[in-house]
Length: 98
Picture 1 (cartoon, rainbow, N blue to C red):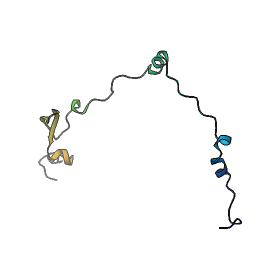
Picture 2 (cartoon, rainbow, N blue to C red):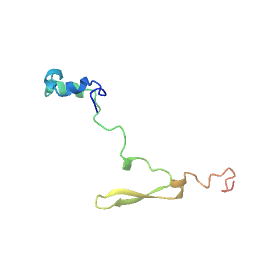
Picture 3 (cartoon, rainbow, N blue to C red):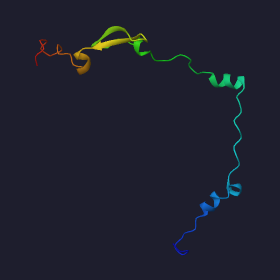
Picture 4 (cartoon, rainbow, N blue to C red):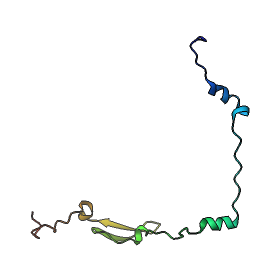
């Protein structure tokens, strides 16, 4: 490349002279006082608004299989209606036909 094909790049000059162009550093974070912490936490809910999965109602097609594994977490099984979402006995004629 020759000097005629290069374009001026002022950002390169700023990058190599931070003492002249860099902004002032930010103030360091201060540790909040007890009063500030209490004011910040005011109105914050402390309990979860949703139920845990094992406390929720059973959905159609699922069956309890008792605790499972070393953690003794609840487990369950599904039947065909849990996978399809269609109950074959809910036909308009009531006999399972279409």
